[in-house]
Structures are given as structure tokens and as C-alpha cells.
Length: 573
Image 1 (spheres, rainbow, N blue to C red):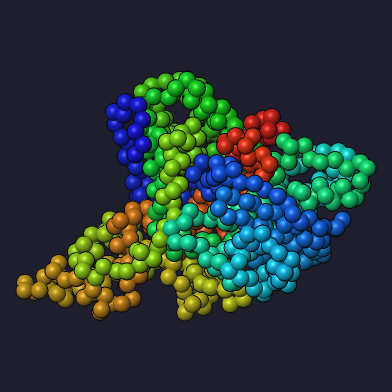
Image 2 (cartoon, one colour):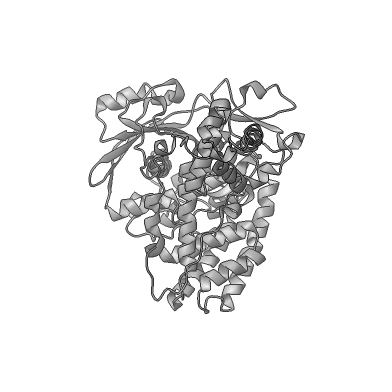
């Protein structure tokens, strides 16, 4: 832990039994540890330079552009292909076959031959192929109404309506940003800071999108067209439609999940352990709460669950503002007292918003934790066969106490089935008692599997209860030879012994499970905002909204995720 002035106590991390509930994970918000903000701090700190060596696009948005980011040791280039997509082909579905724009992030600066090779493949996405020279593959569609509004206004010499911008928040939304070796692209190094290539891709897509609409306006009317006002320009993020394909990631990467959560929880504990808040920090925090309330005003959603959560969050932020205004931060250990107050006065959504807000003034205390958020998951894969059976049972009892008390014969406990679709090889969630899906079920129900393993361990103990052969003397390897179907659970338990935040403590196949909780957890670590569920299985978000553009990295403050009224003129309708 980083020492701070006159530390007298250290606040413990919140227990995983509290943090790893789906309802709480589904209430996480972006924070200064999120990957978008980590990326922009890195680009600023290392003085990356950005150029646009190619921008050959016509009045319909068709053509090619290249954006190059040059760092101290390497360069990456986003190669963009614009297409004239008929309206009836525009879709958010992952099974779409055509898009308004397609992209590849290239290592280095592409030559003409590289661009032509990619032109023959990238527009086809999964149907094409890329090479180890490429790091990501992506595609995006225009938000037709807002794109048309902005294009028309700019071409007529006027600025777009800020309230119309606030209703949508993006000119294009991506439907996939593929990386990590997909379709022949380069693998990411084990242990590297996660998703930085994907975040750089989206950051450059945002620049391309705004340049595109300004360019098309200029071509439409060269004499009257104007560029976007910088404050309005920053209000645009990149939209994203994310479905169930992302949800299994949380279950399939337990070490990585642990490292993300552990970094956040450690950061919270560090801030709660600060003895006093200076006057400047108190003022900064009060302003941040106000800015969070402004940000909530632009959060549009039609989903009933999210609308209820947003209403509760609005009330929470009002209560928090009042509490802080009454001097809540004047006492010793103010952040610890404030968080404890929140646990009894705010909803889970409000509590987790408070966690994010509390980290903001303490970058010098918490930002280094981003270096711990990668993982070499291969190192955790081998099973230690010498672990004793009693030790394994104790782990199961500790990590999956709720699962061991669940009636796994009850239809509502096993109502769902995770499987992979035949069409796109994408994860899907079906109804066990309505569709014949069980033969295709994926191992994405660790709670049920833990209960099954525990039951078999109980039988194992019964079979080996003779005095001369105590079950506690047996290695787990002996049990797994008899029951190899439990190897993956044994591995997960041994991971959980060292990584306490690696397991979701809820039932991922229950009838009342909301997959969007899994999506929001992961997307909050990306840095997404304005979660807008379209059902319980897919969600629209906004990325990099209010962030600086490449030429503004040194002038826009790091707390851009909470815009002020002047920076976001449409925040208060």
C-alpha cells in the first residue's frame, strides 16, 4: 500500500460475498481505473503523436482513411473503410453482413499493399482474414437520425442541436471489436494490460466518425459548411451494441476477473483509509457529485429495470449531495464514514457510483493499481493434485455456500442453458424446459457444478470412512481419477483460494438471472456509460463520450467522464 500522511488504520477490502453478487456487479460504473481512461492517461504521459496520412472519402462517405498513433516505441494505425450501406441492410445484429464502416488496427504504418490486402478482407469481417500485422477487426453503423441531423446542420453553417445530441450520444455504434487472435489477428501478450488495443481502436474510430461527418458536410456545401464546436464535438462518443457473446467472458476468465475487481476494491480500501480530506479535495468531490447528477440527466433508457435503477440513482445522488453539503467530509476518516453511511442509505447502484466518485481525487494513490489488472491465466491452469479432499470441501463451503444450500432439482434453479449458436458460433442463452438444448450446454454454471462436486465428495468420504483410510488423508487427485468431470471445478476452487474475487457468487442459470448484469460488470471496466438494455440479454452503451480527441489530450482534464455544465450544454434539459 502507498503510505499516506499519519496512517492510523487500514480499512479492509470488501468481502467477495458482498462484491461478487450479480446485482452489485450489474451496478458498477466506470472509474479512473477503467481501461479507456487508463489508455488516455498513457497516451498523454508518453506524448503519443497522431496523424491522418490518408483521408480519401467521397461525399457519400465511401473511401479509405488511415489514422496513425505514434508512441515512443511503436506505432499503430487504424485503417478505415467507408461504405454506402442501404438502409435496409443496417443492423445491430452480430449476424449482419454489411456495415457503414469497417476497420482494422494495424501494427505500424501501412503501405499501399497492406491497405489493398485489407480492403479485400476487412469489409467482409468474419468472412475475410487478417494477419499477425493486425491487432483488431471492427465494424460500425451510423445512428441514421443523428448523423443526418448533424450533417445537415453543419452543411448549412449551423451547429447541431445539443439536446438532440444528448438523446443519442454517438454518430456511429460498433457491433464488434474483435481482438486476441481472432480471424488471424495478432495475439495479445499474457499479463499485458487488458483491452488496450480494443480501446485504442474505438478511440480512433471516434475521431474518424467526427472527421467523416465534417468532411461530408464540407463536400455538400463548401461555402457554408462549418466544423463542430469543440464542446459539442466532445459530447459524441462511440455507441456499442453488446449481447450475450460478452457474458461468458466473466465466467471463463476467473483470474482476470479477480484482478479487475481486486484492483478496484484495493483502491476503495486505500481511499477509505485516508485520515483526512483537504478543503480542496472536499470541494472537488462536491463538484463531482454535481457533475455526476448532470451526467445522469443525459442517460436515456426505455428498459423498465434500468429506468427503476436510474430513478433510484437520481435520488441517491441527491441524498449524497445533501449529506456532503452538511459537512460529512469534515471528520476524521471521512471516506470510510461516507461509504458506511452509503451502505445504509443508498441503493447498490448509488453505492457503486460513490465508489467511483471516491477514487477520482486520489489518482496518486490508486492509478498504479492498473498495472495489476492483467493476468497470465495459463499459470493458474494446472491442478494441484496433492490438495487434500478436506481442503477442497472447505473451499467449496466458503466460496459457494449459497450454491450448496440451493435445491438443484427445482426447475427455477436450472431454468437456463448456455450454448453456442450454429450460425455464428456465438454464446446464447436458452430455456431448458422449452427447447431441446441440454446436449449442447456449455460449462457456464459454476455454482451448480460446485454443488455437484460437493455432493460427490460427500459420497467419496462415505466410501472411504474406514479408520485405516481416513478421507482427509486422500489427495484430490484420487477423487478426480474417479470423477474427472469435476476437474474444471477443482481448478476453479484452487484459483479462488488465491484469487478471492474470481467467482460470481450467484446462480448463472437461474430463471431470474439477468445476463445484462454480467455485461455491465465487464463494460464498466471498459469505461462505458449510459447503459441502455434493449432486453435482459443485450445492451447499448456509449464509449469515450466527453473524452478528449487526439489533439486535445494535453488540454482536457483526466476527469472528463464527469462533464461540467459548460462542457456538456445539453446535460440539463
